[in-house]
Image 1 (tube, rainbow, N blue to C red):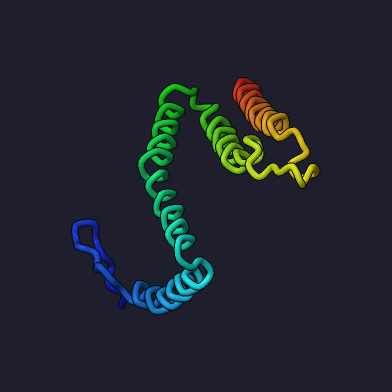
Image 2 (image 1 turned 30 degrees about the vertical axis):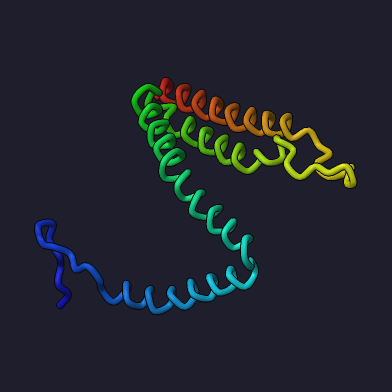
Length: 150
């Protein structure tokens, strides 16, 4: 018979799944670190470490709190019928902004490659945002009309 843990009992810190995951995951982490050290000698390894650690710090200190605050504001101030579509449009807008940022800023443009980054990425981002928020508005409108018919 399987033992069921009730809400007032302490859960075991490490079960079989933890040890299996550790046994499978540690060699993969070691292989990845070995590849990183092999691919980035000297100063490049230090720059890669700063990039990864800096990204984690920026995420934990800026991005995650900002997203939590935005979620709280949306739930608090947006009507219940619109929360889901507004959250979806906000997530889509944020992801598009993060992915398109280097393109919009023009990082990587060189004089020797005139065809590289030849599009108007700012306009493209604005179009995608317009589609996301228009879709959210349509979904909200459909929800409101459907709710009134009931």
